[in-house]
Length: 266
Image (cartoon, rainbow, N blue to C red; front, side, top):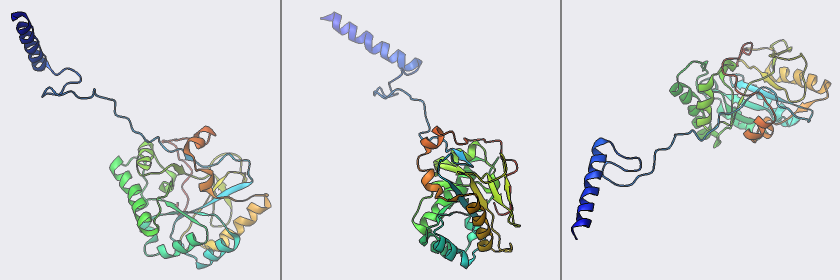
């Protein structure tokens, strides 16, 4: 009868020594079992960065930044032409003008994220970038009851931290542009051969003092689009599945590159 007692005593002493030397994996300090430590992984993949959408459809995508220019005739143009344009809004620029963009949404435009205050994000710490992106998500959700999936970084500049912050704010794609409309009506291109081609994302900068008006600049752009046998497509419909975006070979994150993308109002 003494041998089992002695064995039990040895087991207790050995357990005590193990605790003194450092807890064994799977055992808490108080002796309770616990799960083994696991590597911490971010469940959100980084969003792809796109300036062109590979597609067989004869479409291009019109995007407008900031929200500074609130031309009332533009609402009528979007309604009459049924233009599925994308509006990337900055809260500090829109100011009291959210009602104008509510009218644009009502006639078919979409509203997307362009930060709270329009800072150049590249190089800023994660907390600051997240505050800019998530803060505007909150603003747009409170104004329109939506959570945008698309984000355009101001001036087209970003880094890996931008992509991580965007993912954490619910963004599924970061949208740049291959073509940009100048104030004089000419298109400039960030890469590739000049000339609109199917799948191009076009940036139409806006400003309160720009002339011709936003409506007039858009009408001229539509003539060029139609001359090339193209039409305006809905960008959101072509970026629904971020995994498919990657699979089709669309531009991925290029954190240290965004030269030449700066344009008025972007």
